[in-house]
Amino acid sequence: MITRILKQIINRDLSLNKTIILLGARQVGKTTLLNELCANEKELLVFNGDEPDTRELLSHVTSVQLKNLFGKAKIVVIDEAQLIPDIGISLKLITDYIRNVRLFVSGSSSIELANKINEPLTGRKLEYFLYPISFKEMVNHHGLVHEKRLLPTRLIYGYYPEIVTSPGREIQLLKNLAGSYLYKDILSFGEIKKPVVLDKLLKAIALQLGSEVSYSELGQMAGADKETVERYIDLLEKAFIIFRLNALSRNVRNEIKKGKKIYFYDIGIRNALIGNFQQFDLRTDKGAIWENFIISERVKYLNYNGFYGSYYFWRTTQQQEIDFIEEQDGKFSAYEFKLNPKKNIRFSATFRNAYNVITMKTITPANMEEFVVYSK
Image 1 (cartoon, rainbow, N blue to C red):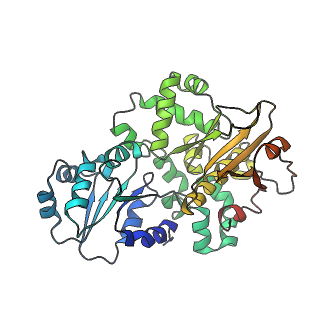
Image 2 (cartoon, one colour; image 1 turned 90 degrees about the vertical axis):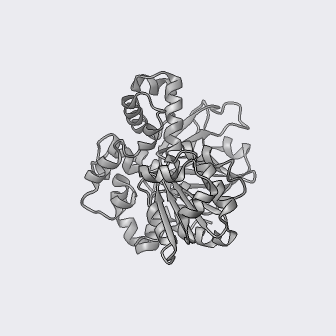
Image 3 (cartoon, helix red, strand yellow; image 1 turned 45 degrees about the vertical axis):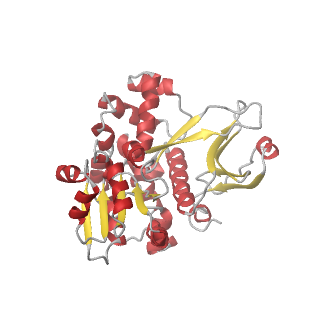
Protein backbone atom coordinates (compact mmCIF):
# COMPACT_ATOMS: atom_id res chain seq x y z
CA MET A 1 0.00 0.00 0.00
CA ILE A 2 1.41 3.38 -1.05
CA THR A 3 0.84 5.89 1.76
CA ARG A 4 -0.60 9.16 0.54
CA ILE A 5 0.74 12.39 2.00
CA LEU A 6 -2.78 13.76 2.28
CA LYS A 7 -3.74 11.00 4.72
CA GLN A 8 -1.48 12.44 7.43
CA ILE A 9 -2.67 15.99 6.69
CA ILE A 10 -6.36 15.09 6.97
CA ASN A 11 -5.80 12.98 10.10
CA ARG A 12 -4.11 15.99 11.68
CA ASP A 13 -7.11 18.20 10.90
CA LEU A 14 -9.88 15.85 12.08
CA SER A 15 -9.84 17.47 15.51
CA LEU A 16 -11.26 20.65 13.93
CA ASN A 17 -14.61 18.83 13.49
CA LYS A 18 -15.29 20.14 10.00
CA THR A 19 -16.80 18.38 7.00
CA ILE A 20 -13.93 16.95 4.96
CA ILE A 21 -14.18 17.67 1.21
CA LEU A 22 -11.79 15.61 -0.92
CA LEU A 23 -11.41 16.70 -4.56
CA GLY A 24 -9.43 15.15 -7.39
CA ALA A 25 -9.74 13.58 -10.83
CA ARG A 26 -11.33 10.17 -11.23
CA GLN A 27 -9.05 7.24 -10.41
CA VAL A 28 -6.47 9.22 -8.40
CA GLY A 29 -7.29 7.24 -5.24
CA LYS A 30 -9.96 9.29 -3.44
CA THR A 31 -12.10 6.29 -2.50
CA THR A 32 -9.07 4.32 -1.32
CA LEU A 33 -7.94 7.25 0.84
CA LEU A 34 -11.40 7.67 2.36
CA ASN A 35 -11.50 3.96 3.13
CA GLU A 36 -8.16 4.23 4.90
CA LEU A 37 -9.26 7.27 6.91
CA CYS A 38 -12.37 5.39 8.08
CA ALA A 39 -10.82 1.92 8.35
CA ASN A 40 -11.27 1.56 12.11
CA GLU A 41 -14.84 2.85 12.23
CA LYS A 42 -17.53 0.21 12.72
CA GLU A 43 -20.55 2.50 12.55
CA LEU A 44 -19.91 3.64 8.98
CA LEU A 45 -22.23 4.44 6.07
CA VAL A 46 -20.91 4.87 2.51
CA PHE A 47 -22.87 6.37 -0.39
CA ASN A 48 -21.73 6.57 -4.02
CA GLY A 49 -23.11 9.35 -6.21
CA ASP A 50 -22.49 7.21 -9.30
CA GLU A 51 -25.42 5.03 -8.16
CA PRO A 52 -28.94 6.21 -9.16
CA ASP A 53 -30.50 5.04 -5.87
CA THR A 54 -27.94 7.05 -3.90
CA ARG A 55 -28.79 10.18 -5.87
CA GLU A 56 -32.47 9.62 -5.09
CA LEU A 57 -31.83 8.98 -1.39
CA LEU A 58 -29.70 12.07 -0.78
CA SER A 59 -31.40 14.73 -2.90
CA HIS A 60 -34.44 16.80 -1.89
CA VAL A 61 -34.52 15.35 1.64
CA THR A 62 -35.35 16.74 5.08
CA SER A 63 -33.17 16.54 8.18
CA VAL A 64 -35.62 14.01 9.68
CA GLN A 65 -35.30 11.76 6.64
CA LEU A 66 -31.51 12.00 6.84
CA LYS A 67 -31.49 11.10 10.54
CA ASN A 68 -33.60 8.02 9.81
CA LEU A 69 -31.35 7.10 6.88
CA PHE A 70 -28.14 7.36 8.91
CA GLY A 71 -29.43 5.54 11.98
CA LYS A 72 -26.58 4.93 14.42
CA ALA A 73 -23.80 5.73 11.95
CA LYS A 74 -20.98 7.87 13.33
CA ILE A 75 -19.18 8.29 10.00
CA VAL A 76 -20.88 9.08 6.68
CA VAL A 77 -18.92 9.00 3.40
CA ILE A 78 -20.47 10.44 0.22
CA ASP A 79 -18.38 9.57 -2.83
CA GLU A 80 -18.74 11.42 -6.20
CA ALA A 81 -21.06 13.90 -4.52
CA GLN A 82 -21.10 16.29 -7.50
CA LEU A 83 -23.57 13.95 -9.22
CA ILE A 84 -26.24 14.29 -6.50
CA PRO A 85 -28.83 17.03 -7.13
CA ASP A 86 -28.92 19.74 -4.44
CA ILE A 87 -26.17 17.98 -2.48
CA GLY A 88 -25.12 21.30 -0.92
CA ILE A 89 -28.45 21.63 0.90
CA SER A 90 -28.30 18.01 2.10
CA LEU A 91 -24.76 18.52 3.41
CA LYS A 92 -25.83 21.67 5.24
CA LEU A 93 -28.71 19.79 6.90
CA ILE A 94 -26.31 17.05 8.00
CA THR A 95 -23.77 19.47 9.49
CA ASP A 96 -26.45 21.63 11.17
CA TYR A 97 -28.85 19.02 12.52
CA ILE A 98 -26.99 15.70 12.78
CA ARG A 99 -24.14 16.73 15.05
CA ASN A 100 -23.01 13.24 16.02
CA VAL A 101 -22.02 12.36 12.42
CA ARG A 102 -18.56 13.02 10.95
CA LEU A 103 -18.94 13.71 7.23
CA PHE A 104 -16.49 12.91 4.41
CA VAL A 105 -17.37 14.05 0.88
CA SER A 106 -15.47 13.41 -2.35
CA GLY A 107 -15.85 14.77 -5.86
CA SER A 108 -14.06 14.32 -9.17
CA SER A 109 -15.14 17.69 -10.52
CA SER A 110 -15.37 21.16 -9.09
CA ILE A 111 -17.76 22.18 -11.87
CA GLU A 112 -20.88 21.36 -9.92
CA LEU A 113 -19.62 20.42 -6.48
CA ALA A 114 -18.04 23.78 -5.68
CA ASN A 115 -21.15 25.65 -6.79
CA LYS A 116 -23.37 23.42 -4.69
CA ILE A 117 -21.44 23.38 -1.43
CA ASN A 118 -19.50 26.64 -1.12
CA GLU A 119 -22.34 28.79 0.18
CA PRO A 120 -24.24 26.14 2.20
CA LEU A 121 -21.03 24.95 3.93
CA THR A 122 -19.32 28.29 4.53
CA GLY A 123 -17.22 27.90 7.68
CA ARG A 124 -18.21 24.24 8.04
CA LYS A 125 -15.76 22.51 5.67
CA LEU A 126 -12.10 21.83 4.96
CA GLU A 127 -11.16 21.22 1.32
CA TYR A 128 -8.27 19.04 0.12
CA PHE A 129 -7.02 18.17 -3.34
CA LEU A 130 -5.69 14.69 -4.12
CA TYR A 131 -3.33 14.45 -7.10
CA PRO A 132 -2.11 11.33 -8.87
CA ILE A 133 0.66 9.68 -6.84
CA SER A 134 3.68 11.95 -6.44
CA PHE A 135 7.40 11.30 -6.86
CA LYS A 136 7.81 12.07 -3.16
CA GLU A 137 5.18 9.51 -2.17
CA MET A 138 7.01 6.85 -4.18
CA VAL A 139 10.34 7.88 -2.62
CA ASN A 140 8.72 7.46 0.80
CA HIS A 141 7.39 4.09 -0.34
CA HIS A 142 10.55 2.40 -1.64
CA GLY A 143 13.41 4.89 -1.49
CA LEU A 144 15.00 7.58 -3.66
CA VAL A 145 17.45 5.34 -5.54
CA HIS A 146 14.75 2.90 -6.62
CA GLU A 147 12.35 5.62 -7.73
CA LYS A 148 14.98 7.49 -9.73
CA ARG A 149 15.76 4.27 -11.57
CA LEU A 150 12.09 4.18 -12.59
CA LEU A 151 12.08 7.80 -13.81
CA PRO A 152 12.20 6.94 -17.56
CA THR A 153 9.10 4.80 -17.02
CA ARG A 154 7.29 7.48 -15.00
CA LEU A 155 8.00 10.07 -17.71
CA ILE A 156 6.06 7.92 -20.19
CA TYR A 157 3.30 6.34 -18.11
CA GLY A 158 2.82 8.80 -15.26
CA TYR A 159 1.58 8.30 -11.73
CA TYR A 160 -2.05 7.23 -11.70
CA PRO A 161 -2.35 4.61 -8.92
CA GLU A 162 -3.59 1.87 -11.23
CA ILE A 163 -0.68 2.52 -13.61
CA VAL A 164 1.94 2.49 -10.84
CA THR A 165 0.63 -0.76 -9.36
CA SER A 166 0.16 -2.61 -12.68
CA PRO A 167 3.58 -2.84 -14.38
CA GLY A 168 3.37 -4.38 -17.83
CA ARG A 169 -0.24 -3.24 -18.40
CA GLU A 170 0.34 0.52 -18.52
CA ILE A 171 -0.60 1.14 -22.16
CA GLN A 172 -3.89 -0.76 -21.98
CA LEU A 173 -4.90 0.95 -18.74
CA LEU A 174 -3.84 4.44 -19.86
CA LYS A 175 -5.82 4.16 -23.08
CA ASN A 176 -8.87 3.35 -21.00
CA LEU A 177 -8.19 6.19 -18.57
CA ALA A 178 -7.57 8.78 -21.28
CA GLY A 179 -10.85 7.95 -22.96
CA SER A 180 -14.15 9.59 -22.10
CA TYR A 181 -14.04 8.06 -18.60
CA LEU A 182 -11.57 10.72 -17.48
CA TYR A 183 -13.91 13.56 -18.40
CA LYS A 184 -17.14 11.70 -17.74
CA ASP A 185 -18.36 14.43 -15.39
CA ILE A 186 -18.00 17.19 -17.98
CA LEU A 187 -20.05 15.19 -20.48
CA SER A 188 -22.69 14.26 -17.88
CA PHE A 189 -23.35 17.90 -16.98
CA GLY A 190 -24.21 18.71 -20.58
CA GLU A 191 -21.64 21.51 -20.77
CA ILE A 192 -19.93 19.93 -23.77
CA LYS A 193 -22.08 20.10 -26.89
CA LYS A 194 -19.52 18.51 -29.20
CA PRO A 195 -17.46 15.73 -27.56
CA VAL A 196 -15.43 15.32 -30.76
CA VAL A 197 -14.23 18.91 -30.37
CA LEU A 198 -13.17 18.11 -26.81
CA ASP A 199 -11.08 15.17 -28.05
CA LYS A 200 -9.41 17.30 -30.73
CA LEU A 201 -8.77 20.11 -28.25
CA LEU A 202 -7.09 17.80 -25.74
CA LYS A 203 -4.84 16.38 -28.45
CA ALA A 204 -3.98 19.88 -29.67
CA ILE A 205 -3.03 20.91 -26.11
CA ALA A 206 -0.97 17.73 -25.73
CA LEU A 207 0.95 18.48 -28.93
CA GLN A 208 1.75 22.06 -27.80
CA LEU A 209 3.11 20.98 -24.43
CA GLY A 210 5.61 23.43 -22.98
CA SER A 211 4.72 26.18 -25.46
CA GLU A 212 2.59 29.26 -25.01
CA VAL A 213 -0.87 28.54 -26.33
CA SER A 214 -3.19 30.66 -28.41
CA TYR A 215 -6.89 29.93 -28.01
CA SER A 216 -7.42 30.98 -31.62
CA GLU A 217 -4.80 28.50 -32.88
CA LEU A 218 -6.18 25.74 -30.67
CA GLY A 219 -9.61 26.53 -32.07
CA GLN A 220 -8.34 26.11 -35.63
CA MET A 221 -6.84 22.73 -34.72
CA ALA A 222 -10.00 21.58 -32.92
CA GLY A 223 -12.57 23.09 -35.28
CA ALA A 224 -14.07 25.49 -32.76
CA ASP A 225 -14.21 29.24 -32.11
CA LYS A 226 -12.02 30.97 -29.52
CA GLU A 227 -14.83 31.32 -26.98
CA THR A 228 -15.67 27.61 -27.14
CA VAL A 229 -12.01 26.70 -26.67
CA GLU A 230 -11.72 28.95 -23.63
CA ARG A 231 -14.89 27.48 -22.09
CA TYR A 232 -13.78 23.89 -22.73
CA ILE A 233 -10.32 24.55 -21.26
CA ASP A 234 -11.96 26.00 -18.16
CA LEU A 235 -14.08 22.84 -17.81
CA LEU A 236 -11.07 20.56 -18.31
CA GLU A 237 -9.25 22.48 -15.58
CA LYS A 238 -12.22 22.14 -13.23
CA ALA A 239 -12.26 18.40 -13.93
CA PHE A 240 -8.59 18.28 -12.78
CA ILE A 241 -7.18 17.08 -16.10
CA ILE A 242 -5.11 20.15 -17.00
CA PHE A 243 -3.92 23.33 -15.31
CA ARG A 244 -2.89 26.71 -16.67
CA LEU A 245 0.28 28.64 -15.93
CA ASN A 246 -0.04 32.38 -16.51
CA ALA A 247 2.75 34.74 -17.54
CA LEU A 248 4.19 36.95 -14.80
CA SER A 249 3.89 40.56 -15.93
CA ARG A 250 4.52 43.34 -13.48
CA ASN A 251 7.79 45.27 -13.54
CA VAL A 252 9.37 44.95 -16.98
CA ARG A 253 8.07 46.96 -19.94
CA ASN A 254 8.56 44.20 -22.53
CA GLU A 255 7.12 41.32 -20.51
CA ILE A 256 4.55 39.09 -22.22
CA LYS A 257 1.33 40.16 -20.51
CA LYS A 258 -1.34 37.62 -21.37
CA GLY A 259 0.58 34.47 -22.18
CA LYS A 260 -0.55 31.05 -20.98
CA LYS A 261 0.93 27.59 -20.90
CA ILE A 262 -1.17 24.48 -20.28
CA TYR A 263 0.11 21.38 -18.52
CA PHE A 264 -1.38 18.01 -17.63
CA TYR A 265 -1.65 16.92 -14.02
CA ASP A 266 -0.36 13.55 -15.24
CA ILE A 267 2.11 13.10 -18.08
CA GLY A 268 0.88 9.57 -18.78
CA ILE A 269 -2.53 10.94 -19.74
CA ARG A 270 -0.85 13.38 -22.12
CA ASN A 271 1.15 10.63 -23.82
CA ALA A 272 -1.96 8.46 -24.10
CA LEU A 273 -3.91 11.27 -25.77
CA ILE A 274 -1.35 11.51 -28.59
CA GLY A 275 -0.87 7.74 -28.66
CA ASN A 276 2.89 7.88 -28.17
CA PHE A 277 4.47 5.51 -25.65
CA GLN A 278 7.91 5.44 -27.25
CA GLN A 279 10.68 5.08 -24.68
CA PHE A 280 11.89 8.34 -23.25
CA ASP A 281 15.46 8.44 -24.58
CA LEU A 282 14.27 8.11 -28.19
CA ARG A 283 11.65 10.84 -28.12
CA THR A 284 11.81 14.21 -29.84
CA ASP A 285 9.52 15.78 -27.20
CA LYS A 286 11.47 14.73 -24.13
CA GLY A 287 12.26 18.32 -23.11
CA ALA A 288 8.55 19.20 -23.02
CA ILE A 289 7.76 15.96 -21.17
CA TRP A 290 10.38 16.72 -18.52
CA GLU A 291 9.04 20.26 -18.11
CA ASN A 292 5.45 19.06 -17.63
CA PHE A 293 6.51 16.26 -15.30
CA ILE A 294 8.65 18.36 -12.98
CA ILE A 295 6.17 21.26 -12.87
CA SER A 296 3.29 18.95 -11.98
CA GLU A 297 5.45 17.31 -9.29
CA ARG A 298 6.32 20.72 -7.88
CA VAL A 299 2.64 21.72 -7.84
CA LYS A 300 1.87 18.55 -5.85
CA TYR A 301 4.72 19.29 -3.45
CA LEU A 302 3.74 22.92 -2.91
CA ASN A 303 0.09 22.22 -2.28
CA TYR A 304 0.73 19.33 0.11
CA ASN A 305 3.08 21.62 2.02
CA GLY A 306 0.65 24.50 2.47
CA PHE A 307 2.06 26.88 -0.16
CA TYR A 308 -0.20 29.94 -0.34
CA GLY A 309 1.55 31.93 -3.06
CA SER A 310 1.27 31.89 -6.84
CA TYR A 311 3.28 30.41 -9.70
CA TYR A 312 3.95 31.61 -13.23
CA PHE A 313 6.29 31.43 -16.19
CA TRP A 314 8.15 34.55 -17.40
CA ARG A 315 9.02 35.78 -20.86
CA THR A 316 9.81 39.03 -22.67
CA THR A 317 9.29 40.03 -26.27
CA GLN A 318 13.09 39.67 -26.65
CA GLN A 319 12.71 35.94 -25.90
CA GLN A 320 14.20 36.10 -22.42
CA GLU A 321 12.37 33.45 -20.41
CA ILE A 322 12.22 31.44 -17.20
CA ASP A 323 10.29 28.18 -17.01
CA PHE A 324 8.77 28.49 -13.54
CA ILE A 325 8.41 31.34 -11.05
CA GLU A 326 7.08 31.07 -7.50
CA GLU A 327 5.92 34.14 -5.61
CA GLN A 328 5.13 34.20 -1.91
CA ASP A 329 5.08 37.23 0.39
CA GLY A 330 6.56 39.40 -2.36
CA LYS A 331 9.60 37.15 -2.80
CA PHE A 332 10.37 35.28 -6.00
CA SER A 333 12.04 31.95 -6.77
CA ALA A 334 13.02 31.21 -10.38
CA TYR A 335 13.62 27.75 -11.87
CA GLU A 336 14.79 26.43 -15.22
CA PHE A 337 14.22 22.79 -16.18
CA LYS A 338 16.82 20.92 -18.23
CA LEU A 339 17.55 17.26 -18.91
CA ASN A 340 21.31 17.71 -19.17
CA PRO A 341 22.85 18.43 -15.73
CA LYS A 342 26.07 19.67 -17.35
CA LYS A 343 24.39 22.43 -19.35
CA ASN A 344 25.20 25.83 -17.87
CA ILE A 345 22.14 28.09 -17.53
CA ARG A 346 22.48 31.86 -17.21
CA PHE A 347 19.41 33.44 -15.64
CA SER A 348 18.12 36.72 -16.98
CA ALA A 349 19.67 39.78 -15.34
CA THR A 350 16.55 41.69 -16.39
CA PHE A 351 14.40 39.49 -14.21
CA ARG A 352 16.86 39.51 -11.34
CA ASN A 353 17.02 43.30 -11.33
CA ALA A 354 13.25 43.77 -11.57
CA TYR A 355 12.10 41.41 -8.80
CA ASN A 356 12.99 40.48 -5.23
CA VAL A 357 14.59 37.16 -6.15
CA ILE A 358 15.68 34.80 -3.37
CA THR A 359 16.37 31.67 -5.43
CA MET A 360 17.54 30.95 -8.99
CA LYS A 361 18.16 27.30 -9.74
CA THR A 362 18.30 24.81 -12.60
CA ILE A 363 16.47 21.52 -11.95
CA THR A 364 17.55 18.35 -13.75
CA PRO A 365 16.95 14.65 -13.11
CA ALA A 366 20.23 14.68 -11.16
CA ASN A 367 19.01 17.11 -8.49
CA MET A 368 15.21 16.87 -8.76
CA GLU A 369 14.89 15.57 -5.19
CA GLU A 370 15.94 19.01 -3.95
CA PHE A 371 12.88 20.41 -5.70
CA VAL A 372 10.12 17.85 -5.09
CA VAL A 373 11.17 15.79 -2.06
CA TYR A 374 13.42 17.68 0.33
CA SER A 375 12.83 21.30 -0.63
CA LYS A 376 12.57 23.85 2.16
